[in-house]
Image 1 (cartoon, rainbow, N blue to C red):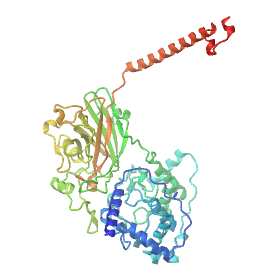
Image 2: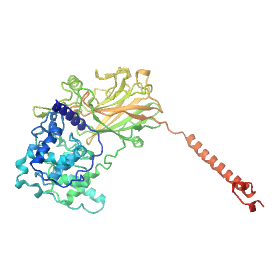
Image 3: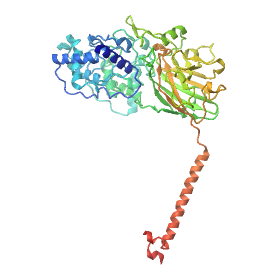
Image 4: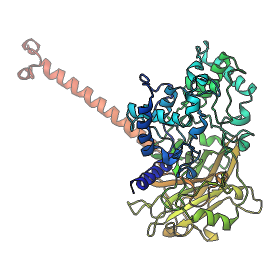
Length: 563
């Protein structure tokens, strides 16, 4: 029974972390403090076995082969320790890692995967112990002096000197000339032409990293960490070492360029309230209309839908950018998110309903017969607003509301965007829980419009809708000055996402703020003038009384002044 409970705990831990929302990593990989390395003897191995059996086996397997009972639910798959092939190292390509390298990885974890950081859970001694046990899975290699990793340490030189602008331009040129764009894409969002065909050393599909999302870099996103990955490569993946093809200076240049691609470093505007900008005249219909430049942009983190089966532990989209404009009659939202591929083919509706709204297992198994099993559906995004947002103080459930707390949905779908026979890519729907899929409003209530476009690994979508309709309390009604709860759902069809298998946000708020009238500024200015005149008059009056000796009893003025 304890072993079963441990398995369930590991499942919850692994699946929860697999869908974690974006945020700063717990320090850079090379910055992890490593103490003196102890002797990893037989006693350490046995002690490490106990740590491994308590913390690690359910993902990495009892035999260390990366095929634990939780592994079929994780993306990417856990590391196979029998192969002794490790991505994060300070040793040359194809070489074993240092013990210190393994210590850094266990301490910090691997962002963007189900491997958590153990620095706050395991003591330093326990981390060294489990390292000793992990090495025992490939003892024939680690104990062979021929493969001693301490003879293969990569030497790090100094970063190039010079102006930052020149270095970044040189790095960009190296990025292009070394064909990095073939995998990572011209926009560096992982949308390169070779991406769909890449596999790891176990023949599982693997995506090139989105270099504009530094928080997801496996081994840290500092310039030094990126330089190390470029130099050593990531063993077990298609990412090679460039130590022989690029000079040390070129590797530093491209490392600085890559590090600059995420200048915000996870510090995007993630406020809870999205301030809508009111404009005069028509709202923009073009995605790149200059009117959007004045609207505040908020980056909203997303995570996998893990409340109702089928739960989704591996969402592809981790954040969505939102801007809102409105006028006297309409509201418009511009939504943007990274997606390596534009999935625009219509889905088989019966198959989508079956795969997306029911599951034999609580969590869908991602691998069958040794391959990643996933359907392909159209990309989509939807906005969710409580129907009675101005009445109830209690927010509906963020997965399609609940009975008695219905929500309205404005859903954009990529297949409808490119279907010449369909008048609009946006559909208005109603939901009141997850017992049944959301149902579309009647045709006469389909008032939302929109458009979307995919460029360089990123979707941009506009959804417009009238503030008010003729159906009263049966539909969402908006008005200037309101603060409206709002949530978002996103599907990456190429990742097998449909129905409840989606990325979602928690509740946020849109403030349809009213513009401040000019009279308000006049009132403030008039108040300041009146206050200044009053204070000046008070000073003159006080001085006059002081000169006449009327304030002597208060210690102000002198008897001479009164003579």
